[in-house]
Amino acid sequence: MVDRNSSEFKSFLELYQRAPLLELGQLADAKRKELHPDGVVTYIVDRNINYTNVCVADCKFCAFYRRPKHAEGYVLSFEEIGRKIEEAKRLGAVQILMQGGHNPYIPFEWYLDLLRYIKRNHPIHIHGFSPSEVDFFATRFRMSAEEVIRELQAAGLDSIPGGGGEILVQEVRDRVARKKAGADRWLEIMEIAHRLGMKTSVTMMYGLGETEADRIEHLFRVREVQRRTGGFTAFITWPLQPEHTAMADTPKTDAVTYLRTVAISRLVLDNVPNLQASWVTMGLKVGQISLRFGCNDFGSLMIEENVVSAAGTTHRTTIEEIRRHILDAGFKPARRLQDYTIIPDEIAA
View 1 (cartoon, rainbow, N blue to C red):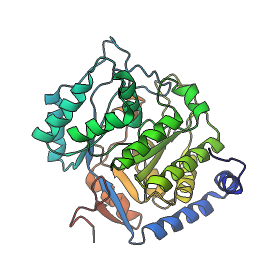
View 2 (cartoon, one colour):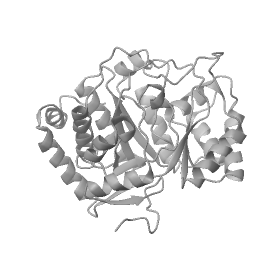
View 3 (tube, helix red, strand yellow):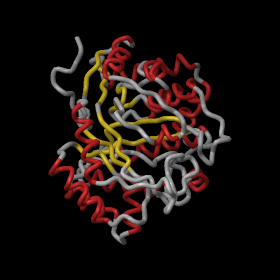
View 4 (tube, helix red, strand yellow):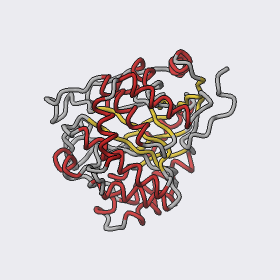
């Protein structure tokens, strides 16, 4: 449990709420320099493949999902997924991010067969199946989470994304994602994955009506798991995109809130090595500014993105634009793999 009355918690909360924006940014930038003194900002070329949009979780903040039997519901065929991978590879992709809805009609063997199919016919790093999906599989197929992860890993899963984290405070999750893995369960699955040798990313989506203290608690909980496992490679935060969702009346947060949030994240999460900018939700210019507020990674080229786009937020870019934004911010751009290994000869002069 996080002690909200501790002096450390109170000091971070006060810093988040009260520090002048540029002062907070300077503190985060100093922490980034301490962790990444080489002045390199990384990025990755990958593709999001949402294998199904059929979902029974009914998250209030999601515009992407469709209920079972909805006319717009789909499940991609193996061949279609293969075509998407090959197209992505031609554009330089080194991984796919594969996530989908909680679809009660897909048998577990389908997922295993899909992973084997990809590795056999379209080999690439598979970053897939968030903790919420793992929890759904465990419940649906009457398996333990460890059994689920072991089987996915044996079939070809390489790493797990941090999707579905939202705010890791149960009161918030009960209000906006009641049917999905709870805060404790989400973190437990991440710990299991780390124990089994898998690296994962970790996220926070804010703007769900939570308090600023809830956001700090989320960060503290992530930091504590990282202290035990060291398995998180990167942290990514972004605001709710409420358009076309059941939370459409929720006010959108602004760029200043985003910059304050990435900055406090860099300061609290001193044991998570990488902080990723979210230009996909904030736009390229704010993403660029975040490189001076603690971020050392510009995220993905995002060849395909469906979930944020479904809420009406669509930002597109090219490798050349990513590299230019990094250079213009005073850094050296470098392409990377999922584990943050830099691809040789890609560091700019």
